Image (cartoon, rainbow, N blue to C red; front, top):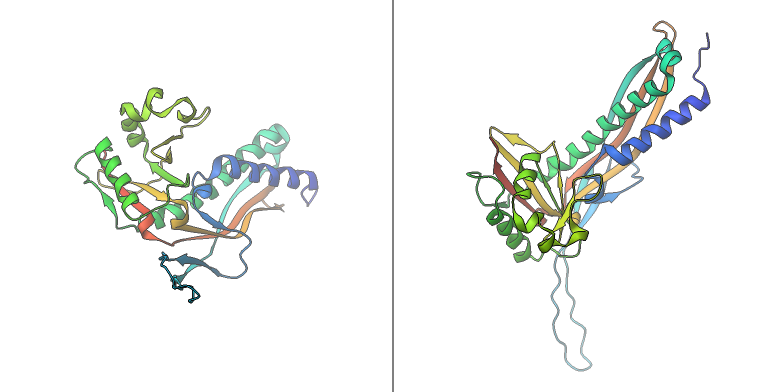
Length: 272
């Protein structure tokens, strides 16, 4: 029996893992500020403050804004997701077995990516409404006002991530679900549950933190959270003769950090 994995097997498997991770693994990766190809154990995101415009006298010096630049460090960590693929299973159902393990590894890494981002979102101290009720229109509008009052840009880069219970509650709000209010182009996307409302892209997520019967949901701007990538998803496959199986190891190096807490509003929702 061969003691090495065929090169085509490795290439096809790696391609499958990357595809599954990009398509179905992480929901939140593209909703935050991302830095790729980080060298080292950490990287720095710059938090830039607000500038103030003022006048000047004729022939006078142009006033300096003195905008604050605060470096925010983001530490990377290594994550692994491995599993065994029995040689005889490969002979019987080769393609299906590869796809099953590839999807499992990609989904595991995708969930970890989202966990890193959600953990940082949960550090926000800005809370809209109370946890005495679910996700109501009043609570949504309160969060909308909070973001506007601190000048969070309404530039198409706002995102709102809610639990599935809260998604159902949103669908009971006519202004959210009715095409007469939001327009046909902003209704739920075909093939996935996500839609635009109040200048933000809303999407449901099963991994939001829940304490007792209170679920935390978040409305945030893309620049409020930093996501650093030291190594994209990689796959290593080795043959173990004593087990008559291949060990498939998926791995990545990533980290997340809070850049600007004012760009995040938490919506605490009662969930029975």
